[in-house]
Length: 257
Image (cartoon, rainbow, N blue to C red):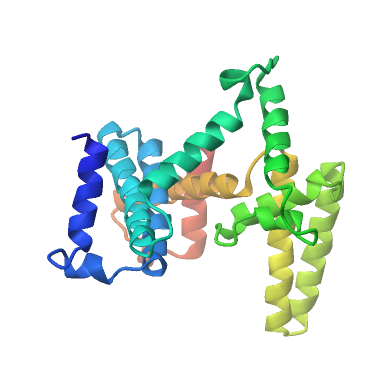
């Protein structure tokens, strides 16, 4: 028995009348948060360079695929074999330069072919489908903003220069200031959303992804804040005992290195 067969057998047992009450209660809807969580835990293990944890977290992610496949099999819709066949067929179909007779010069040409094949696969879609339909609705907000903008750019709806995007950022900042000055909280939140969307666009024009850029910013803040905490404690004080001016001074010291 292969380990995949063993895993599938365990999942069937857990879902059986003699199985686990918790597993038997789950649906594809209740499993959605776990699927998202496992993806982030895989990424975290990669970032930490923990090979054992990376292996374990990939297993947890695979469990989500097996679990949902088992639920769909019970409904008579598809099973794990169908899932594996679907992705195998797609990989072969989209790599004609490996499994067919197509020649490519480099990775850029591979992407051109890949996107062309994707379009032929979707030729049967409704005429009123939007290019934005390709963006999953449950992506994290900044990542979704990036992907929405990328899809719009593919059909020419994009500024050619990053300076124009920065002009839009300044426009949104001014509109946010006005909404706050008017005491209109609902409008201010709406304008803040527009500002964040525009800032995500700046990141895309800088060949970055706003989600990762903000994650990098979060990490830098954490490192510097922990350094501030350490310096304050080294001086025999607690953060809560310091004024904002004192904390700012320590923060500036940390920034200067």
